[in-house]
Amino acid sequence: MDLQPARVYLFQNLEWMLWNLFLAAIPYFLSLYLFRPKTKVTKIWSAAFAIFILFLPNAPYILTDIIHLYTLSFKLASVRGLMAAILQYSIFVILGVALFLKSYQRFEIFLVKKLKIYVLPFRITIFAILSIGVYLGRFYRFNSWDLFINPISLLQNLKYLLSVSGVSYIALFTIMIALLYYLYENFSSLAKLK
Image (cartoon, rainbow, N blue to C red):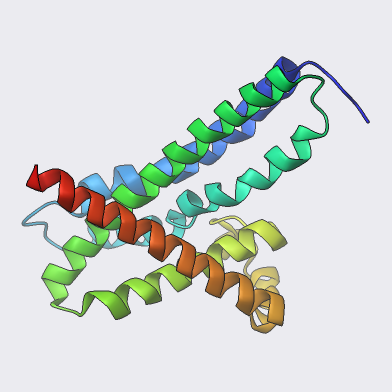
């Protein structure tokens, strides 16, 4: 086992953590442009919306990166190092979840008002689609842009979505992000009442 000071691992984590946060921030910043009141749907808007949808799974994907903390815990030489790693991962996950919740909230409010659709079926459908994206990213290492640069391989791997592990993961992840969003929505409502 390669036991090293925590600072080595924490520094190595920064590269991929910042990259994943950047990918999670793309839909957030697009949501600021896309889902403003009185927004007109144009060709540019449609292209930006497609990018938003394509990159949106990157934000909840960050929740799955916690698996790296488990692996890292066996490599750290001290309890203090482990505490520093837990703090680093906590900040990373909180930022990723916040980017997801804000991005999705703007998206839902905009579309529900525009299309006058029922919120719950829409929400569950979107969360299931996001969970499929997270599953393909976590287990088959696909990225958002693979839809364009690696479409054949992506299509070939879609069959795994129907496996027991695929269906189970997607269902559980859908429930998890639905609960997260439910809690966020309710705490936001309570905060507005105060």
